[in-house]
Image 1 (tube, rainbow, N blue to C red):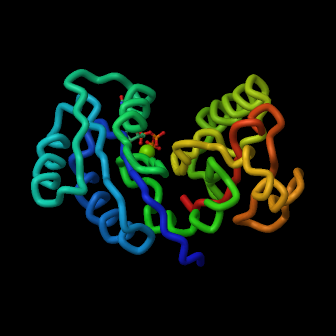
Image 2 (spheres, rainbow, N blue to C red):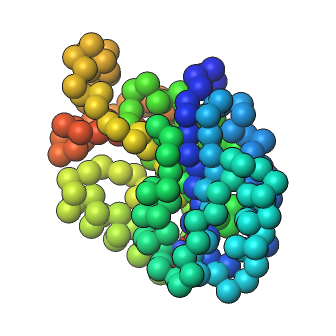
Image 3 (cartoon, helix red, strand yellow):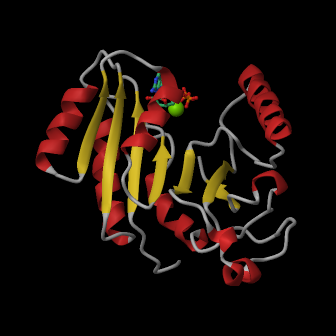
Length: 210
Ligand SMILES: Nc1nc2c(ncn2[C@@H]2O[C@H](COP(=O)(O)OP(=O)(O)OP(=O)(O)O)[C@@H](O)[C@H]2O)c(=O)[nH]1
Ligand SMILES: [Mg+2]
């Protein structure tokens, strides 16, 4: 694994996650010092009617690296993501779901790719979904990929790392060192370079165990 360290904001969209959020934040605070000297953990509480906000408030009082962004009224998952991105202040921004469905200890593995990509988006090796959810998910991914001329294997995977300012294509030396477009059979390598977003972003995909 890389010894690369990055400034990073980690955020979690949360709606009624009183049973999960404390352990997720604590686990994250154990993981982040291993990959960063400059980090923050943001919880976006999206109009929860349980104790999510109170729990995060008390975590924030104990640790200045923890912040609560509060939506008094539910704005939905997309609204919570927007708030998380707006609140994040570090060079790299990572988010995953506040229910702890994904394993935050897999985050350090993504750092292998930060020198080659602006967006590192994971895909689930095993999906626990079945039936209509699986079909919905498949159709949604096809639609998004078709509309935006992308080739993202698992659009819905909530385990993503973004570089705040993506300018690596402006740097000819870095561009020259990147592997050629196309599928790369090795995991944790850029899988493809997407023509429609290539001017702005370099996208890499890697696995995440669910
Ligand atoms: N901001 C926001 N987040 C929500 C809302 N509903 C759920 N969430 C959060 O979004 C994340 C994903 O929601 P889930 O209900 O786990 O959805 P899912 O992962 O597709 O479904 P499960 O398989 O049941 O876990 C969790 O972190 C929730 O707290 C909402 O209305 N607003
Ligand atoms: Mg979930």
